[in-house]
Length: 282
Image 1: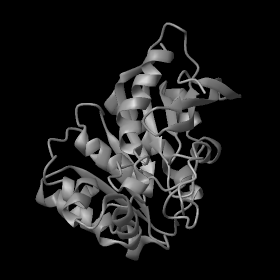
Image 2 (image 1 turned 135 degrees about the vertical axis):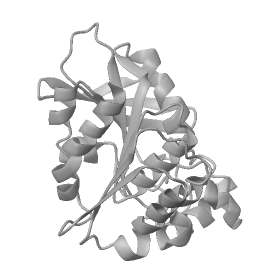
Image 3 (image 1 turned 60 degrees about the vertical axis):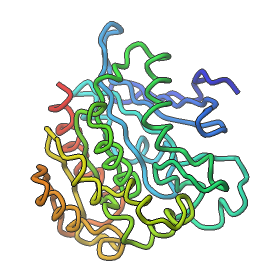
């Protein structure tokens, strides 16, 4: 399998194109897929990039198929890039035994446990993918980038943004796991991927990182459904809100009555998020 991306799908939408690619990832040691929405634009126009990180059990296709984000992305002239959520096909023992660990559950970190050593989604998203895009798609301006995501992907977007304020202009999230060191999903994933030293876990916890990385220009935007089944035990948005207040970080946390954890919720508010990023990328 080539490291150069090979196009494996193309669908026209709102005047632009959803395209899907496959390539070999040296970072992860396996073939990976990612999707890009190219908005309608003259070939000479350089397009800013919004990365979307998906949640547990998702692939690169969930957001592209379900969110309806392309309408506003086409209007604003923003390319959408959706990577997969974990390595696949490595046949690690137990990698598919549960939906919240292993395949489809990369948690956007660099695993240190030997068993999971290929689980390096942090490096894939922050380093390999942007380089791959800039080398193979000259219309994409990866120096103008923002990042967003849902649930586990919201956790990824926030932590990656906070640790790389020079690389991203803005961040937003839907129902993010903001304090994984204190919730069952995070405890299970981090103990397996990172070992038992909890201070190592804090490197991938947005609530912990806010106190260290708080020179933030664009306000952080988070939407959270009030009828989300995972709100009380897993997501803990008010922990993050408190941390932002303590560090004087601008946060817009919108609690949305009646909405759950699904893509129906994301599709309802995605235009606001695209506009939020368009302002920062302009």
